[in-house]
Image (tube, rainbow, N blue to C red; front, side, top):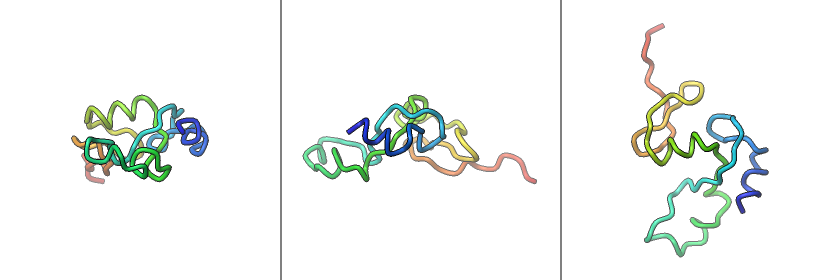
Length: 86
């Protein structure tokens, strides 16, 4: 499955565009949904990400990663606030 997800993305991280090597679950697998095959194995719930983006998702580092996007404290990709007025 991992290879399929990486190949589907052309080997690129779907968040930042760097080399992707991790198949990440968009909806996190937990005790309540671990038996749901759509969550665990569904290709619509998996994206290819790089190691750095995967770390940011799971550890909530709020750094700008690509073109005005960043991860919030819950690991969601969101628009970065504009720090300077134009």
